[in-house]
Image 1 (cartoon, rainbow, N blue to C red):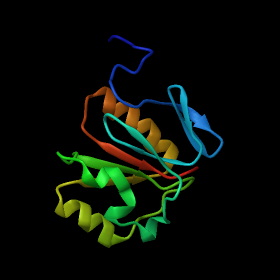
Image 2 (spheres, helix red, strand yellow):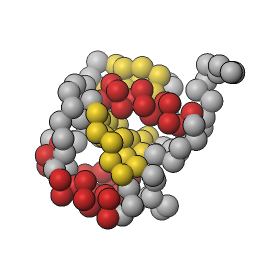
Image 3 (cartoon, one colour):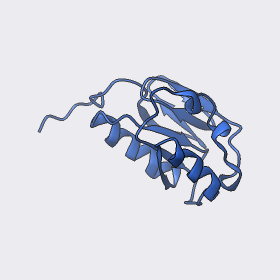
Image 4 (spheres, helix red, strand yellow):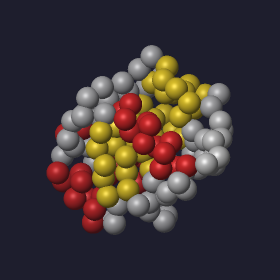
Length: 125
């Protein structure tokens, strides 16, 4: 097995945590972050999990093609989002995997290293 320090994939890589936010290569996102397989956007205005809607995902909601699934990091602990939000994504063919944000950040690296077309919405820690 080849181990690569660079993560072995293109697009945004989470390289650490910074306070309540995330470090992506040379950039720091002090709050939440939205990730596609090619770009990262700040998500400082993330609503509570039970108030999420498709529009809450900003640029991720407009991706074409849509990804396999969304990794939803709900902050320091796992909090289930509103069922209507999950149904809205599932109707577009996107699965939703909910976990605390640290676990979601780790899962992001694993899935992207497998070249999976996923997106992530990670709330502040």
